[in-house]
Amino acid sequence: MTDVLRVPSADRAGARLALAAPAVLIGAIVPLALLALWWATTSLGLVPPHRLPPPRAVLDAGLQLAGDGALWLHVGISAQRVVLGFTIGAAAGLALGALVGLSRAANRLLGPTVGAFRAVPSLAWVPLLVLSLGITEDSKVALIAIGSLFPVFTTVAGALRHVDPHLVEAGRAFGLRGIRLLRAVQLPAAVPSVVSGLRLALAQAWLFLVAAELIASSMGLGFLLIDSQNNGRVDRILLAIVLLAVLGKATDALIGIAERWLLRRWL
Image 1 (cartoon, rainbow, N blue to C red):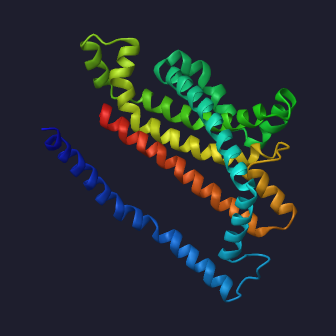
Image 2 (image 1 turned 30 degrees about the vertical axis):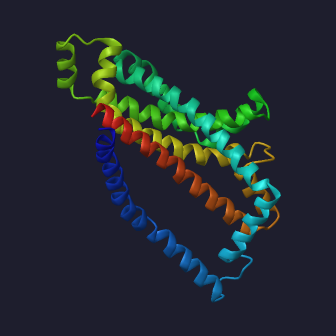
Image 3 (image 1 turned 90 degrees about the horizontal axis):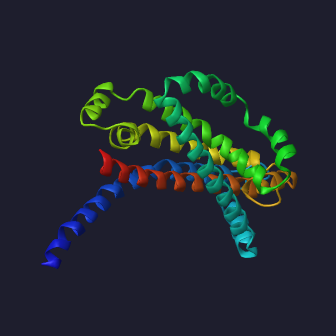
C-alpha cells in the first residue's frame, strides 16, 4: 500500500523536472551566446587582452584564487553580509510596510518621511555609517539592510493598501479581526507583491554590497573588484562580476522556490 501511494508523488516530481528542464535550457541560450561572442571577440583579436581577457584567462584567475583559498573566503564573507543585511532589512520593511499599508494614520504619519529617505543615494549613507558605527561589519550590514528595506516596504505597503475590500469584508463577516484577518485574508492576497518586493530587495542587497565593501574592507567580492582595479587585473574584475551575477541569480532562485511554496499554501 505504501508503494502504491509513493508512485503518484514520484510521478509528480518527474513531471516537474520534465517541465523545468526545457526552461533551464532556454534560459541558458543567452548566457552561452554571450560566452561564445566573448570567446570569438578575444580569439579574433578585436579587443586587446589587457582590456578584455579571454574566458580562459578569467577561468585561470578563478582557479588560482580557489587554489589559494582566497576565492571561497571572498564569496563566503560577501554572502554572509548579504544574508544578514537582507534579513534585517526585509524584516523591517515587512513590519513597516504592514503598518503603513493597514493603517491610514500610520501612512499619513510615516509615508512622506520613508519616501524621502528612500530617495537618498546609497553612497550618501556611507559617511554617516562610518561615523556612527565605525569601520566594522556592523556598518556594512547596516548599509545592505537599508538597501533591502525600501523595496520591501514599498511593495508590501502598496499591496496591503489595495487588497480587494470585498475580501476584507467577507473575512470580517466570518468574524476575522486584526492578526487573524491579516493572516487569513490580507497577507495571502498580497503574497505575489510581497515576493516581488523581496526579489527586488535581494537584488538591491547585492548592489549595496559593493558599496558596503568600499568601507575599508579587506575581503569580499566588492573588495576583489576594487583591488583588481587598482592592480590592473581585468581578469579578476570580470571574475568578480560573473560571481556576483551567479550568486544573485542563485539567491533569487531560492526566493522563487519559497514563492511557489507560499502560493501552494495560501492560494
